[in-house]
Length: 416
Image (cartoon, rainbow, N blue to C red):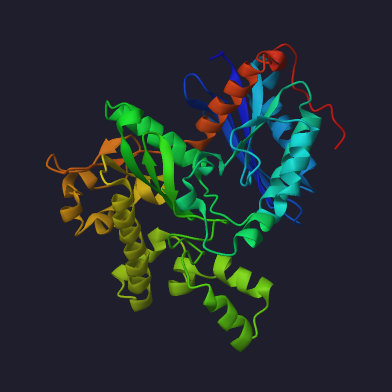
């Protein structure tokens, strides 16, 4: 793998998150976020080593946001012209049935991502905007797109197929796509090395628990099941999303509550989950409410954990033998209460948590199970930016483009 850096860009509808990553050493050289794009008051936060820059100023659009990012690199470092930028890696939420691997960006790839935007109308259009702007402003560096859905593209048909009219499903792309794939792939690969096992020999359940949450079953490095479906709404209870729900609830709310399709979409994606049950979508705040005796908060936590335990049980059956149960992402890495409650009572299935090892936040890969546990329970910090950087570099190396961006400064020369 070539020496240098990769600029990883995650463009949202009103934000741009970014990291300058050393894909070989595995560290973030710099990172930051532009927020509230298009609003009256925007902000930019940039961190490089011990230097932190914060600005509160209007950010008119994504082009202005990218220009602000490049200007801040020039001001606060590191200087991109001497950082050996080998590629720009873009996170894209939905690859549909078109993209099963990362892809080198050209006009046709951008058009294809735009064409499948109906599958992810809240995410893909923002991703496309970020890609177009970054290509204009960084024209001398190869750009690569990495898809959240790619790791689950090869799910067995029995796992990816919904039991609806097959012609309707094929015409409209209705199937299980799965999300958080970059994280699930990275963690399932890394935990094998951490445990001293070959990826091909390991059966793993990964619980990616953040404000968005998903579970996966991975056999020998290949995903065989995942909780999110055609969209990121299905599956586990999340911060503001309902997760699994009877589809007839939608018909009921439309017919009897007078809610429109858009209103139901807003309800299930933004006003459900922990927030809908307890008015609090952050697990830290939820635990505080539980400690104060709040009955709604206690029920929300119970529902959240019940769904988790149900998926662990189901995926244990899918895999037949589980070697590792892995907790990752913000909640998975930092919330020992959720980890303890999830594993409680699962001893007959082979999961025996060690309360002492489990205690506290885990910033490093940590085994938290008893020696007698049939499955090793691990907390393994995810690093989606590093995974995207490495995949982007692999694509550029395979295309013979490595080094194009290191000979001249990736200056903001475009007119977006």
